[in-house]
Image (cartoon, helix red, strand yellow):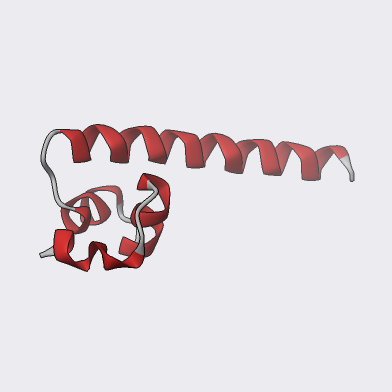
Length: 62
């Protein structure tokens, strides 16, 4: 793996960690998955994955 590839993956991992932290904080404050997805401009599936939830979180999205 080249150095630029390593930096890219490190950056992506950092981005994911930040999104996860933000999503967890918002969820803990009572926001729905849909609200969090809208706020962070991500799709609902991504937020569910970051929060460690299954796809049945559609209930939380409403």
